[in-house]
Length: 329
Ligand SMILES: Cc1cc2nc3c(=O)[nH]c(=O)nc-3n(C[C@H](O)[C@H](O)[C@H](O)COP(=O)(O)OP(=O)(O)OC[C@H]3O[C@@H](n4cnc5c(N)ncnc54)[C@H](O)[C@@H]3O)c2cc1C
Ligand code: SF4
Image (tube, rainbow, N blue to C red; front, side):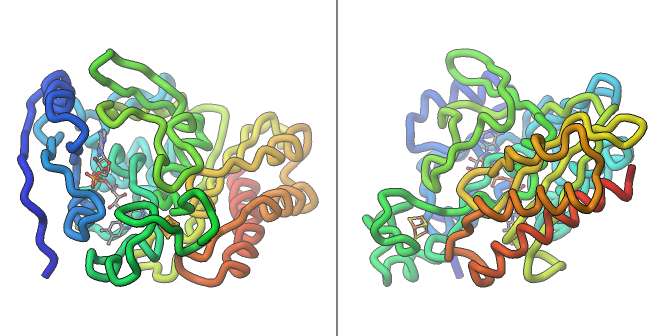
């Protein structure tokens, strides 16, 4: 049985108290929300914070506020189940509720939060293993070792951004509010991520993610498609989030396609907008976007399935995502 290491545990009642405790504890400290990512990682000694600050007693972080006209603000500790089952979100933001609904299992969705999902650690077959397993290969660059076993001559880690919520947040141009010792800032969700398996977040470790802001619901449609081995539960080996806004005659005014699980960050397909804007979602334009997404997608050999098949699936699933949007228009 894998056991948690010993750690100090705090349960602040306010955001200010949480941030103060985090600053006082120094670098060897983590926030925890649902704990469905952090605690397994601690059991495998991938993360070993001496102090853990729980967010579950801060009521403000569990609120859902807003309307379809103004957009919604979800507190960082709103659970995935609450998002998946909220009638308004299901109706007005189906991509958001669908992405939450296909994460892990019902029990984990009852515990797991949207904040934890947006900040999920990157994943790799050589890293998501027990301490003994990792020790047997002399560890790797992401924790305790020197080398990357996926690309041994590489100076960087290629662990994969594997959250289902992240590509959707980016494709919708959603925003997040962060609170740290130096105050509060609101940034686009896309600005949270960087293409590095170790330093995959731009946020400072002390900063608390307090809110996730969805834009007003009118004028656009979005979908999320997830590819995984088992439909019952599994991390994505590919996630495709696509968004379009169209005129009444079906001409595309704005579009965005974002890929998950093919890189250490949510990967934009910049050509999607160039190809689609001014055109309709017909087979030719959809095929051109699928080709544009296929070319730069470079999955590494550190998750399930073969590389070449996962790359090929980028084309297939981008095509299917855009077909979904065509059908729903
Ligand atoms: C078996 C299994 C299957 C899973 N399948 C999937 C899947 O298919 N798709 C998927 O996306 N995820 C999956 N997960 C991962 C996880 O359950 C979800 O991503 C979940 O949403 C994480 O939220 P949490 O609240 O439990 O995060 P936690 O474990 O509490 O936190 C995750 C990280 O975020 C930090 N953190 C959490 N909240 C905040 C905050 N408000 N401010 C600052 N830092 C914070 C923590 O310090 C930690 O580093 C799976 C997990 C397991 C164990
Ligand atoms: S990509 Fe390389 S460095 Fe990163 S976790 Fe995997 S083996 Fe380790």
